[in-house]
Length: 92
Length: 289
Image (cartoon, rainbow over all chains, first blue to last red; front, side):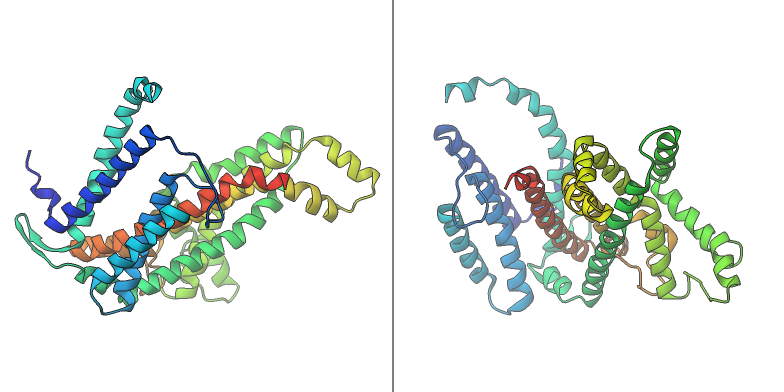
């Protein structure tokens, strides 16, 4: 089966591999140490999975805002997203 | 730990997972791949990075379509929710009238969406359509193919006619579920009809109305078939909503920009779905506070 129609590129492959790795890691983590919902800085009670979703969604918006508003390298958006993601997972 | 591993239910979920993977995840991955490349044909593609995203985010036609979309969805909610509640309040509570009004309300919901567009094209035509001829007969010039305002009015009328029944049916179900004791108590206290509505009926309809708002927002935000058939996005671009613009882009073989646009569209939908999902989750708990 040829996968040419999916038009893979190295950056998008790395992107999806990272997301898949995050999902697998979170699943293993949940299985080995089941988590419960808790209230953090966010106004709603969240599980680590909820916070991962919010982290990824927020990161997507951070990148879009960066592309739309600034002419600087996109790596800065990645750094901001990583900081946001870690903060959200820890205190969110 | 052992329980989680032994759980055979995971195998039962597998077919659904495979289906979703083929029908949603793999196409979505492909769209992401397309969004970073300039594609000329099979095997002829070049990596362009975030160029399409830059182009789309600065695209004035996309901005216009986005504001048009929010205006449309906002108007839909502002008109359909109060109107649906009013219809539900006016509907008969018992007797043969109940079945008749339920059937009448359900009719617009049963018609295929592209047929609805065709019905309204004919209905509003200024030369042969019942509504078009009637309005023009009153001395008001009305032509949805020429004037942007007329096109908007026609699309809104069609949308309200098509979907207000859903809101009315939901609101009616909510109203019927209120125990008679509430109304008896209100009568004893001499409550006005407004007070009964404000303090009994409206709070009790909160759950169904949240669902109605959610459904109507999401559906109107994704609307395609009806306005496409009715106006084709015109006159000019005046009724080109997000999905119509997206299809215009992708059929022009600009798959790269169309893919970047799809991802932005998807992210907007994802954010609103999540917000509404949270609102729905809190529907039951809000009453108790």
